[in-house]
Image 1 (cartoon, rainbow, N blue to C red):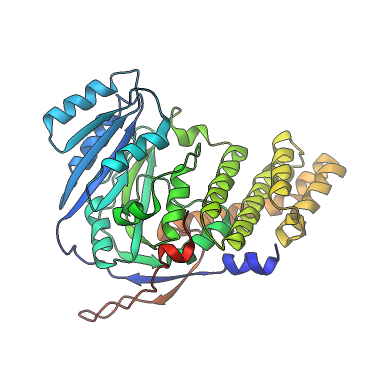
Image 2 (cartoon, helix red, strand yellow):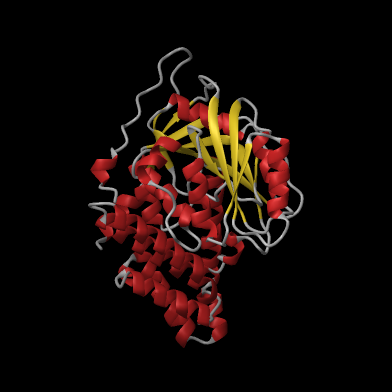
Length: 396
């Protein structure tokens, strides 16, 4: 792939920023909670959905043949509140089939996939529903997630702005970067879009990521600024923790992009951009060791992965810098190679910190170019670019 194609996708991301507006009416939202052996957490998850104000909530919990007390807890919750509906798999079917079963039973106009160990923040559904009501071209709204291990910190509950991207532009940028910007529980989806594109695909760790990318191929994407939309629990048993090794999640991210592009016509540029994006990410992770003067087994695996995905990645500017660092670590005395890597290490740490601060503020890692600001008080909102219809993207 030419560098020109990749740079075109990786350019500054254009967005429209609007002032928040109150909802137009009371929305109906279905919260689907797949549950497997989370009896100790699932009640908190359910109550975080039931306690959402200003919306009509339906909670569908699908138990995936749990071997603990999850099903008993869920049946008690259903007896206590008629808004809770419990489905039980007779055999363990995995998170994708379990969520898709709940999706098929959903009746709300908007939908949330909430893991049984996560929680929604107060007012999260009302804030997202307002965006979806005012902006009918938007198919996915997300916000900032709060990650926690033990005690939960307080959540910000007032949105300061709505950032809106044309879905195809957001998707192209995600492909070019080769990474994900969403955790999971902070997403609210328009169910009519899901009715068109279908449920999740059978991917081990990135089934949710591929689903969001597919939504962006058919609808616009919005971000709630200034507020926290969910609490994501970090613990040893979670899927996200089990996929935390770079070689694992980079392969899984590539699988999500490949699965997406297989379903879209005319998506070869996106596929090539994603392969280069993931390849460059692999080189960055490898440089953690290489710039310390070490050619570790992990660094070798990551370099091999990068070349497997994009044979020309070392011809890029970033790839060339990696190749130079690799030669120093391979041929120079260890102390000299380590000293030579100090400046690149510091630069990448600053770059990474800047990306993280930008993501926390805007929902993406890339700089934004605001193409239109919020209109004056009382003036009509600017028109947003129309999303591509399903037929234009050739969804399978």
